[in-house]
Image 1 (tube, rainbow, N blue to C red):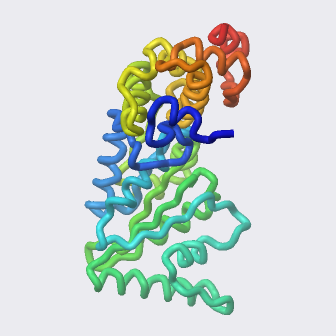
Image 2 (image 1 turned 90 degrees about the vertical axis):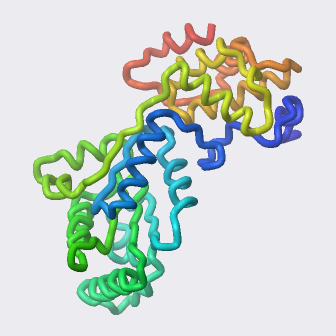
Length: 289
């Protein structure tokens, strides 16, 4: 099979709707601009903890990749993704993410001493350390509390360690618990990414197609509105459905992806996403009919 089937048909330089996070394709919705502003603010002010949340596929990781791409040399970054309990103690994972040598015979006290020395050395060199935890909703509450203790490491009035937590909405529920009050009080910058509305989905689709070298009206407004209805405006799901719809459009030799192509994708079951609790199956079937 020719994997470039629809890119050749539509004269595109690449697939505009890849599921991989790509900061070059980032579409700046109002929410994404605000979220990124809070990220920049948190880094610039050396906020102890910055919190960014959103549903699965809302674009959190893409924003994070854009941030990492634009950070200067004065920031030393460590990234930990999907940390679960039972996979090793938190401090060891943090030190590994920062490329700090960890010896197996070092106890916790020794590792913490080495960690503090690293933070002080970075500070003395004019750099500060940013630890990023992606999918932070999976972290045990004990690990979050341990992170709060890490933010107490400082030099005079300057924070030596910043934390950036990226996670799904339940992360906010965890932090709002009464016994997490001290942690919550350390959050100086936060934002929650919501879904895209109908107009934003259309602008998002146009943006990604143009970014891939296509024309503005290559995806009809009616098709875009159905994509919004089916996906709820979640960027990753929009990408998934639009990608297959463009494949269907190329198979039919059409120059514009229309609502009939989106309906065909849905009717054939070529697009799959988990049914939400408030979305009866019959509603999805009517949309495809």
